[in-house]
Amino acid sequence: MSTRKTGKRNIRKLTKLGGHSIGLTIPISIVRKLKWRNKQKVTVKQVGKRVIIEDWEK
Image (tube, rainbow, N blue to C red):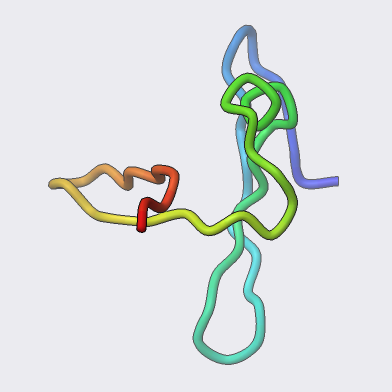
């Protein structure tokens, strides 16, 4: 598996998915806390050196 717990931080590895995409797993505890579901749409945006993933709104 590609996760390692260092103290309270979850260390994750990026995984290549096909030719032009990269995948990242999110800890299930975070997904449950946000009440996200399988195949739910989210928005991804870059702010400086950070990536923000938010629930998609119509």
